[in-house]
Image (cartoon, rainbow, N blue to C red; front, side):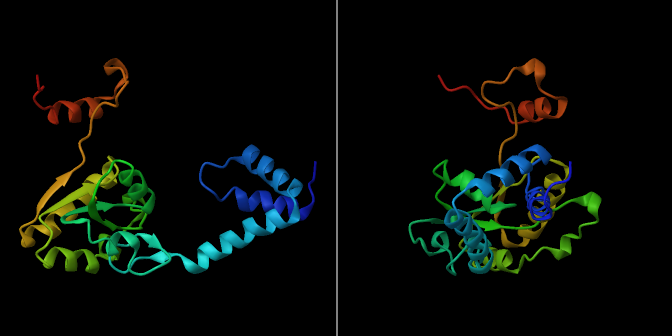
Amino acid sequence: MRLARPLENLIDQLLKLPTIGPKTAQRLALYILKMPENEARQIAQAIIDAREKVAPCSTCGMLTDVDPCAICQDQGRDQRLLCVTEETSDVIALERTGFRGRYFVLNKNFHLMDGFNLDDLHLAPLIDQLASGKVQEMVLALNPDIDGEVLSRYLADLARPYQVRVTRLAHGLPVGGDIEFADEITLRRALEGRHDVQP
């Protein structure tokens, strides 16, 4: 069955969003058409506003509508602790843990298979922070895949001249998971990251 061209276009545009498959895109498109016109316009305007008014912080790279961002302006943050993440969504997740250090967000999809060049990363603000002498530890909160491994080593080499301790998030078994279902790499990392049990 052929749908109205504007409806097909809306479905096609929604399909560009992550985790949205054809059925979900169709369901969302039909829902949007049923919404009151002013609500649909508010959604459209919110997308336009976000695209026009949100940009990476010049200091840390976090997506923000003020520069520097609220985290960089927060004097209560521990300037000795710098956490490097791939995306702003990673910062949001880390903030829920109560982390009180500062961040540097790469804002790049780093994929070795796509021919990504490490020199394309905009790391001048990171180097400035490391060179300031305030940072004592750089925590690499990168995805635990091959790209994250390569990037971790690259950033560790970058930090070496600044006498900064470089750490990374522990990898291992998820809470509530069963050992028998864990893959070999996860189990190996869990063994490597073992620690003493406190009485």
